[in-house]
Image (cartoon, rainbow, N blue to C red; front, side):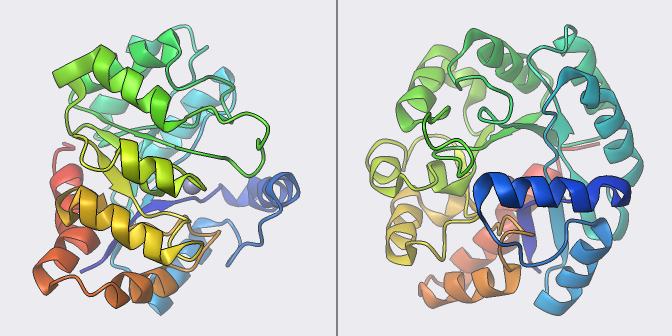
Length: 267
Ligand SMILES: [Zn+2]
């Protein structure tokens, strides 16, 4: 059983436009189009049993529409959704209550696309309120290819939020891209071993040996297999993880066991 914990998909009506924008902003070439249909197709061809879609609210007014749709689709065909929260929404607690009641497992934050540094007090409040409701918080971490001039979520910012919220967020925070896209040395030194989960999205092909070292130090108990599809192929990422030589038990945790523990908390 394989769960891909970090994927994206857009409603059919806006998929082409959204993908064109992201391609031009970030200069990445997608592996598939951005529709839910193509995600399902890729899951079949690449042998993925479940996928987690992480929508991002880039403005406060998108939140409700995104979360309504995620609620409606959540759990169908092995696809699960994170809730979307924007720091300027005006009613963080109401949004989080909606997400919890909808049965979603957590929320996705994207500091670059939401124009907020990860250690900003608005984010700290969202994270604390989410975790108090039993929701997980997954954040983009490290460089974003569309915002290279300012990294909105550095390992130091993560450390500062961890120390500010202390035990409250223990094992509830999920750092995408193994703790820092294009920042593997700093992630290895400062974040590996902290009480957080990390996903493998987008980075496995860029510097596989550094990824292996982060996973080993952080331990497979807190690693979530993830591709960042449509930007990378989940099938290729499965092969890279298998090439690392972890035991079958550790591979099972990375591919599904840890994800099950998280998804199983949603009601
Ligand atoms: Zn992503």
